[in-house]
Length: 244
Image (cartoon, rainbow, N blue to C red):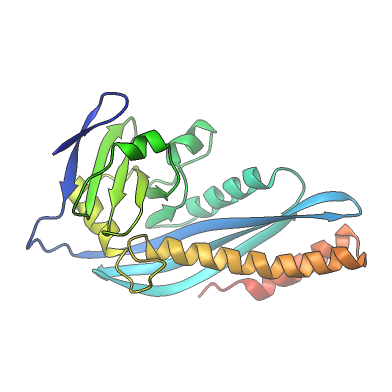
């Protein structure tokens, strides 16, 4: 079965072969960020947190290895800062990197792309989604576009269709098998998605929400200046680092 994109490119639908034994043994890191804007006497500031979770995939089973959190308070555009921090973190890691990012767009912005990365995003053009009424997941559609392969994946009957971009030099069936293996954790909110990215997202939002309560309380009481925020963040950096 083939699917024709809006640009006229034909892509083959990849499926898992019945009876095939897909065995993995690799380290995986998932990186995701979150942010919160707030105000001090010196103007608008942005708190950014980037969470990384570490796994080993043995066979088809994910083993949790640990996590770490990096955060900063800064001026300027929080979205741009968060994007840069996520890529700085990803480029500091070994093994396979998972990101909730559109890799080709970030390449166009001049960001350095990790040498082994898979970007998985839920939000993309509705016109593209309309061409993807394909039954019987799991399936993957992927095609080469310069150094990056891009396509779409659906991993469960009631799951989302995700846009996928990667520079991993594997055959398409192995990519689908890898994504499928990471989508099988028995957590309803994560089933059919990607468990490492799900966990990184939840961790980043947990720390963001905790910091938000602190910052919003302090600013509402008008108790502190910006330098006090900096001292607070430095203290949190020591206590929030979960690297194992």
